[in-house]
Amino acid sequence: MRRHARPRLRLRELPALRLGPLRVTPRQLDLLPSPEAPERRWAVLDERQRGTRFLELPVRSVLNTAASTGMGFWSVNPYVGCEFGCTYCYARDTHRYAVERSGAAPEPLPAWEAFEKRILVKTGVAEVLARTLDPARLAGHTLVIGTATDPYQPAERRFRLTRRILEVLLGHRGLAIGIITKSPLVTRDLDLLGRLAERHEVTVNISLATLDRRLARRLELRSPVPAARIRALDRLTAGGIHAGLLLAPILPGITDDRAGLDRLMGAAKAAGARYVVGSALRLGPAARQRFLPVLAREFPELAERYQRHYARREGVSPVYQRALSERLHELQRRHGFPVEEGMRRSRQLEGREDRAAAAEQPRLL
Image 1 (cartoon, helix red, strand yellow):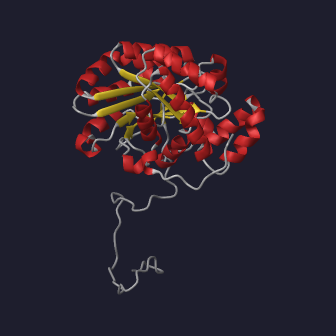
Image 2 (cartoon, helix red, strand yellow; image 1 turned 90 degrees about the vertical axis):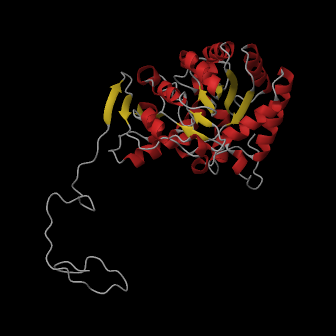
Image 3 (cartoon, rainbow, N blue to C red; image 1 turned 90 degrees about the horizontal axis):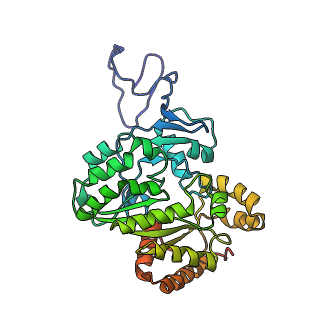
């Protein structure tokens, strides 16, 4: 194949073919965009005084399969990024991936900060879910809402995307639906959750790392206070919703002490929680950029050990995980929580059914 002056593209074992002169009109679609084509810009839906912008993220698919994520469930996330700004949040990396895939002009912010101040809003999430959800494809897997960002973060008050997702699911029967959130805003949808529970198996996981309000504020800049989350758990269970406490993340040397975990489980029991699940800290590349400097400032005695451990891996060592599991199981039994259900939900949420443990790693603490 040749153009006017010199070979443009060579294909082996393909004889030369003279096509003669070709006429290209402006109506024809360019196979390769011009380098001078302007970059797509984000559509700004809303702004906050603290510098947060809410940007529209067009989507053609919204369901993440268990196979694509390596987890034990399917998932859907109405937002990417979160105003709560929890310093340890692993989902910062998912925000970076979404921005890179979008093709829009990047924001002049580091990835960890963009996660908190550039919230991507999937305005069409409910309509796309309605078109693409085939319950048979889930093959018995749970559909979890809020695995990479909080579905009831402050943006939900305006955009109401999570509620619209639940309304779509109301049109089906026989699904297993899970929700993970830190926010008491989930109780706004108690009426809808109750109707869903008549048609599906519905579970709400309230995420909480500590009952200590001051400690929580050092780690989670703008998340709801612990007491508000416990009250939300109480309202959910009182309303007949199958709900439990997700102790996540458990931070080695900070929130993994026996006394603190014991108080958490006691508060969960008093609020009517059906189960308690514990999950240890994971730190991806973008999360490390945010959390490790905070750790050095707030907990300098732990900084070197964290830096050394998480420089080569994202999760805790198998030795630490076993010791933590034993502590959680002991406290679950003491407070009357089903250990087996906690283990099953923990394996599912962490995706450990499909992940073989690597070689033995040194103890973190």
